[in-house]
Amino acid sequence: MMRLLMILRVALKALNRNKMRTALTMLGMIIGVAAVIAMVALGKGAQSSIEAQIKSAGTNIINVMSGNFMAMGVRQGSGASNTLTVEDAMAIRQMIPSAQYVAPGVNTRNQVIAGNQNWQTRIEGTDVEFPLIRSWAVKYGAFFSTQDVTSATKVVVMGSVVATNLFGEDVDPTGQIVRIKNQPFKVIGVMTSKGSGTGFDDQDDKVYVPYTTAQKKLMGIQHIQNITVSAASANEVKSTADAITELLRTRHKIMPGDSDDFMVRTLEEMAAMRTETTKTMTALLAGIAGVSLLVGGIGIMNIMLVSVTERTREIGLRMAIGARGSDVLMQFLVEAVVLSLFGGGIGIALGFAISWGVTEFLTWPTTISTDAVALAFGFSAMIGIFFGFYPATKAAKLDPIEALRFE
Image 1 (cartoon, rainbow, N blue to C red):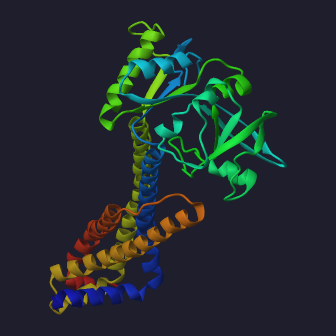
Image 2: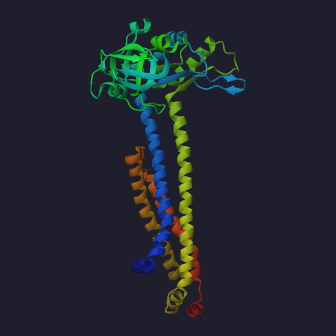
Image 3: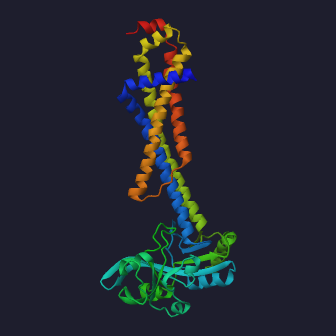
C-alpha cells in the first residue's frame, strides 16, 4: 500500500511538471466522457418523454387511420384515402364487443377568432366518447352531447392553450362566441391541461367540435379520416386491433393478399417504433462520442511515449540505484491511468453540466444514466491502462547503462 501511494505521489509530481501538456492530454478524455454522458442523457430523456406522452394520451388506445394502400407502385401514407366512413366506426362499435369506446374523427387547421384575438390551431372533429377514450376531464363547462353530434351543432370545446390565448389565463369562456372559418361557434367547455400527445403535438393547442359539424360546416366532406378506439382492457388491445383489421377488410371488400387501405396502430406499437428510433440515434451518438474517448487514449499514449524519451536519464538513474523493471512499468502505467481518471472525472462533471444546460435552456428532456456514467468512467480507466501499457513497457525495458548515457 505504501509503495502504491509513493508511486502515485511521484506520478502526480511528474504530471505537475508540465501542466499545460497534462491538461491538453486530458482534454480528449474530458470531451469523450462528457459527450458520451450528454448524448446518452438526451436519448434516455427522449425515451422517458415518449413513455410519458403515451401514458398521457389515455389507456388501451387503438388508432385506425385512412391510407396505407398502393397507387401506381407507390405506398400512400396516413390520410391518403377517403375510404373510412362513419358506418365503419358504427360497425366496430356494434360488432366488436371488446371495443369499449369508439370515436370517428376528422381534423383540419384554421384560425379561431374571439373578438380582436385570434389563434391558429388544429380543429379536431370527434365524437362524445373522445374524453372517455383519453381519460380526459373537462375544466370548465362540459363536452358536447350526442344531440350536438346528430344535429351538427356549431359548438366548440377548447384546449387550455387556445382558451388562454384567446380569453386569458384562468378565465372561464363558456357561453362566449368564437368564429371558425367565418362561422360562429359557441364555447361550451375547456379541457384540463394534458400536454404533448403521441405525435409530439400539443394536445392543449387544439379545439374540439362534433365530427359531423367539422365534416359539413368546415371541411365539406362525407368521409372520416380516423377512428379512435379504446379496448375494454390492456389484455384485449392486440385481439381488438386484429378484429378491427379483419372487420374493415371485409367491409372494404379487400381480397386476400391485397394490402389494406387503412392502418391500425396501437399506442404500444407507436411507442415501440419511436423508442427503437431513439435507441438507434442514442447508440449512434454515443458511438460518435466514443471516438473522442479513443482519440483521447491515443493522445495519452503519444504523450507518455514523449515522456519516456524525455525521462530516459531519470529511468536509467532509478534502475541504477535498484529500481526494478516492474517498478518503472508501474510508474508510467499509474501516470497514464491518473491522466485518464482525472480526465474522466472532469468529463463526468462536464457531462452533467451539459445535460442540465440542455434541459434548462433548450427545454429538451434529459435523463442521466448511472450506467452511462459508470461505463464512460470505466472505459476511460481501461483506455489509460491499454494505451499506457506500451510506453510503460518500453520504459521498463530500457538498458540502465544506455539510459544513463542518453542526452
